[in-house]
Image 1 (cartoon, helix red, strand yellow):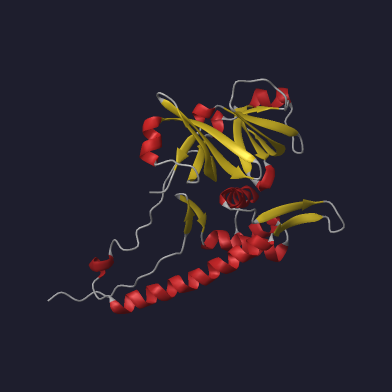
Image 2 (cartoon, one colour):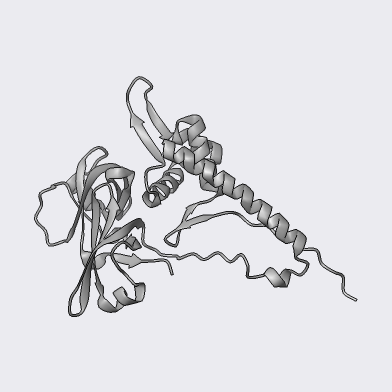
Length: 268
């Protein structure tokens, strides 16, 4: 007779928005460290991660949130810093409460289930994976069907709007309609940058903001543009373009994106 195995049921609590990872234990820990230190540099050190990794996580959370969770203050009496907004503190408290309830659920399930095979597929994580660097959540505010394609406008809040051109078949498959939540996906290589906010170009989307960070590579460079509401748009441009256009932190710039390069996704 084979020995009866004892199974332990465990799991980590993650929150997703529009199919994208939004909040998990690691990100919540980071937010708490930022709240304690008032500095993302110090928070990253305590977490054992790089400054860039920490900011990438913060940007991902801010981009998917209704309102910014983390903001940066420059200068002033205190010398600036990074801090959680009141909304960010509420999100952290809410996550911790739900995490506790999640652990209680797992404990009850472990006590009541004898055969692991019965729950093998119970806690599957449903997650959409995409290579698109830029992901923004919003609501469909305009939908105009043509003979073949449709023009869809997604309101991201804070005065930000994104136009997308998709096939009528895609509109039907995604069940797009006014007021429906949608996720906007834009590859960083599809983003054109211009220092001239009045430049004339056929690209349907024009998102203007302030350059927050530039990273120069051997061939290509990364430019992060901070948009209204704390959202961050990432563009990949050539090293030569970065040097010629002179993008630098604090400079105004506009991201230009063709509507046909915008991908829309929805939850099932």
